[in-house]
Amino acid sequence: MKRMTIVLAILAILTTGAMSARAQMIVDYRGHLWEETSITAVGLIQSLETPLTGDMLLNEYTWVMEDLVANPPLASMTSAGYVTLTGGRFSVYEDPSQNADYGVNPANATSPSTFQDGTLYLTGSFLTLTMWWDPVNKMGNFNGVISFDGGTHLAEVNPSVYKGWTFAGTTSNPYAAIPDGYFQAVDGQVFIAPVPTDEATWGEIKNMYADLD
Image (cartoon, rainbow, N blue to C red; front, side):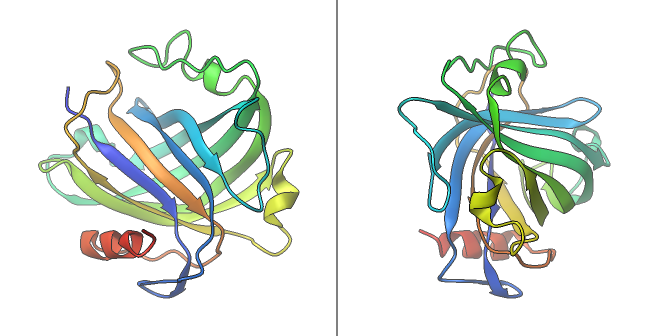
């Protein structure tokens, strides 16, 4: 099975289509997703950055994205087009048991359960999310807005000031296997700057993300 990577990023933009040089990454994460009646994704946090705090040696930090409904469903598409994603939450968990296990053919006995059995560290809901998807070439991009509203570390992202974050990303195919039954691999980052959502082309999303290297 070929692997497809979704790069999920919350991007700081000063003006439409322009990436701020002051974009501040707070979370770096990777994982896998599947689609049934809704989209679910799970994975491991690779790093937590200021202002977020944590102990990556003592704890395992996991994330779950759930209850996102694609219209039309991704698996039903035969040609490229925009997809509206509604609902959905993105949550980070802190767990000293370090027991996350993808298993195969999710949902299963360990996924998503072992990715959400820790303390709820940070969580938010998607306010808007739109995806452009090309099922033939297995690539696309998406953007929207997420608003954090809960978790033990919510105060560290100052929700009284930051009401929402631009959520954007791209898809590609890096030719590696993913666990059986998962639809795509996920690799992304979260940035701490609130801006309105705006549809973007594949090239625009790639250029914005490249500015963060």
